Image 1 (tube, rainbow, N blue to C red):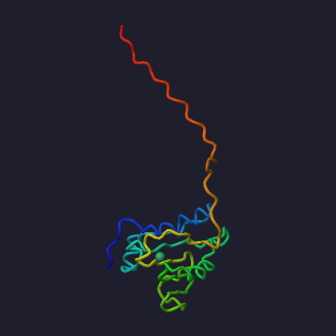
Image 2 (cartoon, rainbow, N blue to C red):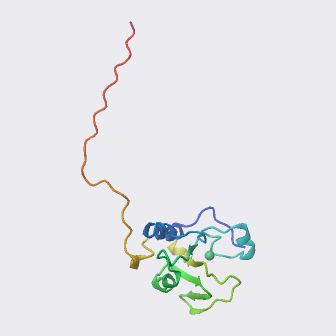
Image 3 (cartoon, helix red, strand yellow):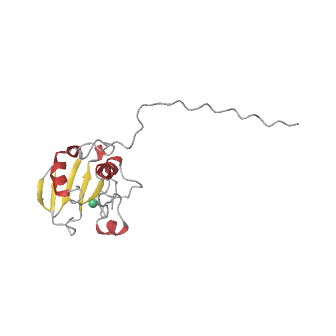
Amino acid sequence: MKPVAKRATPAAIAVLRQATALVPKRKKASDGLLPSKAHIAQNPNSDHNTGLAADLTHDPHSGIDCSIIFDKLKADKRVSYLIFSGRIWSAERGERDYTGPNKHVKHLHISIKEECANDISPWFAWMGTPKPLAKVKAKVTPKPKKKETPSPKEN
Ligand SMILES: [Zn+2]
């Protein structure tokens, strides 16, 4: 069994965060980073154990369509393999039927290469850039100077 990491890698966390930034109202029911106990028992050598995997909930209605993302991410150099809807793709072997017990119809599984663990560049570049969170534009008003509180006088 692969030892279970305490936290997911930045690259894996970025998958879910960036998807949410692009589609804030997306469903997250099948999102996942680190494995649950049941998951460890079922798949003791999962890339989730090392934090090098992310599960992204399939929510085509909101714009997170994992069949499109499955195809697009084949071009992402960070991906070691993808599983969605009964299909698996890896850089080494291409796309084929996935015969594992879980067909992955509710989420896309993304396994990330170890050397890319810290690469948080955009995962969904074709979907555009998320709107920056209400940033205050460069109108800087100087903070009023703190009035010095007079030290309490003792009479
Ligand atoms: Zn997974």
